Image (cartoon, rainbow, N blue to C red; front, side, top):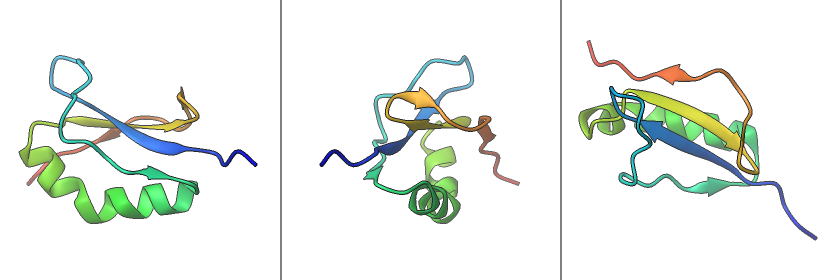
Length: 69
């Protein structure tokens, strides 16, 4: 049985996909979204400006902007 894979692609201010920090791979969209809600601040501090949720490699939702106040 192949399980669906959900993961976040993180982009910098110029739209380039970051190779680090890495995000975990999830088997449920809910888990991926919950993880981002808990970790977006350190990701933004590491240079991520936009997070894109991928489902089996395809963008599944609109991009999420990561902004610190």
